Amino acid sequence: MKKSDLIWAICDIDEDLITDAPKKLHRTRSLRAVLIAAAVVLLLCGTAFAAFSAVGWDQIFSKALSIPEDSTLSVEESRSDIYVTTTENGYTYTVKQVLGSDHDILVALDIALPQEVSVPAISMSELRAEAEENGCDWSEVAYRVRGYQNTGTNETTLYPIRLSEAAIWPVYVDKETLFQNGSDGSDVHRTLYNAALDAFGGDRMSGEGTYFGSGSYYHSYDPETRTLSVLLAVHSDNELPGSDCTLVLQALELVDLEAAYTKPDAEIVSENLIQEPVVLHFSADYTAQSLSYTIYQEDQEIGTMTLSPFSAFLSFPQEPDDPERLAPNRTDYLKGTTYETITVTLTDGSDVAIKQRSSAIGTTQDAYYYAERLFSLEDVTEVKLGDYTILPQN
Amino acid sequence: MEDKNIVTLYEQRSEKAIAETREKYGSYCSSIAYSILGSFEEAEECVSDTYLALWNAIPPAKPENFKAYCGKIIHNLALNRYRASKAQKRSSFTEVLEELEIPVLEGPEDALRCKELSAAISAFLRTLPPQKRRLFLLRYWHYLPISDISQETGLRPDKLSVELYRIRNKLKHYLEQEGFDL
Image (cartoon, rainbow over all chains, first blue to last red; front, side):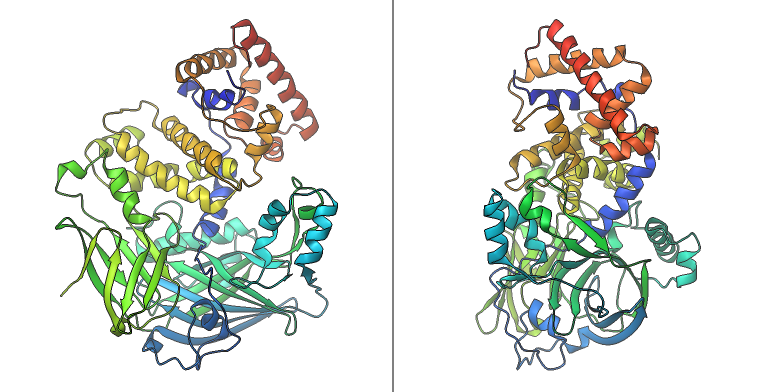
């Protein structure tokens, strides 16, 4: 037998022996997991970012969604200028703009650092030289530090700072209420979660608050202005336009990357610059733009798609009528759908790829996708998804 | 909702089964997956896959201990995902592999023999005092970090490591006596 058979065998021990892990550990993990689980892994690869800002758009949107400088896209009503600011312990946090659809919202956030905080600029080439000198595998080192490169760039300098925990909930909860149970992060999120449950009745809210977690999918640090710009993404099963949102920032990490290039297995140490959770409120004051489609598989209607200028939401609410599609074929049926890339063809003949941001959250049949670039719904001529037929609803 | 009612929902092909599973055992599954994968994103994907696996398995499966059944499914899915990953992240599971001196996690070689090994480990665990059995399970089934187990049990990390070392040695001798050559 192989030694690793031990792992599989322990996994399969008698069920009555399996005891619970401590609940408090589950809970802590769960909340962290929720926050970061919904973090978007938007594939911005291959996008060349120009150093401009399209008229009216915050630069982070221009970069993340490849909005041209002379943009005439008819999507402005989906956008709202916010500019809500708070300063705590010398850090200035500003919610600048939001871009939203019925169920998704992107939030542009700036964090300006105080003078006394020093963020080192780490040269990738020097890092590599040191890693190799220390006998570390460069590919492994590169993997460990890649999260500190400004998103979507090929810059050769790392800034080891990032917002690592944040949550946005489409419900207003004042700061006093949030902190009434102390400033412990898990309490703050539990309070937010309970408030959302109260506000929305819990119909599609289940125990983990998955629908309201958020994480950053785009970040960029500018050493000249000492500002970290972050784009946060949130999905909600409840309608977002017009909702009052509470944003909680929990962990802004300044990271000591030394371990990454000295000892491959050592933990990377970080310092949380946020003393206690920072709270901002803003109103998602925009009008959602959307197109509705029906998804067919071999003439069988299997689901719906809601397209916005930057996202797509797929839902497969019904069991297929055809019993052949039920389990065990169901796995392929669902997986095949949820992992495909959606292609939107525009009137100018160009295609926009819309990729899944995570595996199904919500019911296993739902899936959320984000576009690699912003587009106008009025320019959409065709939507494709693998072998499925996507037709507009009347 | 009671477990047996959740199982009934699966049998009735009601999608509420998944919502109820997530409500009751979502965090439990996330915790196991995260301990193995060391990535929140991957753990959540794995949890979603678990719901799908449950949907496909029940019926015909009719688990008596639904929680443990969920736990086993997510274990298997997360272990397979860990194996398939080209860039495995450091996790408490990685530490467990090191403790058990397993350089690479491979798939089970012989399913039948693995079943026998599993039965032998179950029998061994029944010989342990409850506290030691719990230590073993927290570390080698839940893959909790030593610091978390220390917090839970009140044992100092160094003492805990020694206890786990002794249990591993006992298991090794037990399995050798039972004819397992690992």
